[in-house]
Amino acid sequence: NGSDTFVVRRGNMYYFKNSLSGGEADIAIAFGRANDEVYFGDWDGDGKDGIAVKRGNMYYFQNSLNGGEAEFSVAYGREGDDSFFGDWNGDGKDTLTVRRLNTFHIKNTISYGEADIKVTYGKPGEDTSIGDWNGDGIDGLVIRRSNIYHLKNNLTASGVAENVIAYGKSSDQVYFGDWNGCGTDSVVVRR
Image (cartoon, rainbow, N blue to C red):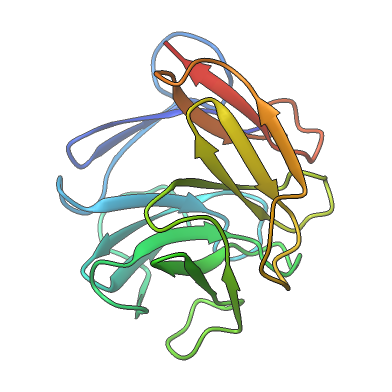
């Protein structure tokens, strides 16, 4: 329905809910290894998120939530790079970005090779998330400093945030998503 929901991870087991409600998981799968870095995104543009895991600079993808082996894989960036996924060009597919220091190396396809765009934003290692902040179908960046969020929609140029908001407490866990299916991502905090 276009609304984001939650998944719980325990080791390499994932428990998905198809609605923002309590109760048992709607889908449970095993994928990857317990110590993998995990990402979710729409890899094939079908409107449904799949799962990806990272080991070193290798990424292993699955479009459907069936568990088991990866459907495809790609090497990108360097071991130790921070990884992010988003739809950077509005084509409906989430692709890779890696951050080195405070430079984001953005790819518009899931493939090996040089970045399509490089953007300098924030400070090295800052708490960063991805989302569509203005509903244009293209993801942007948000840097969190305490309970202040610095949102950047324009990824064609380096520079300062276009919007700055305060929300929650600095000790909150923070998640971003389109919780009501309106096409714009927003924040939710967990205490």
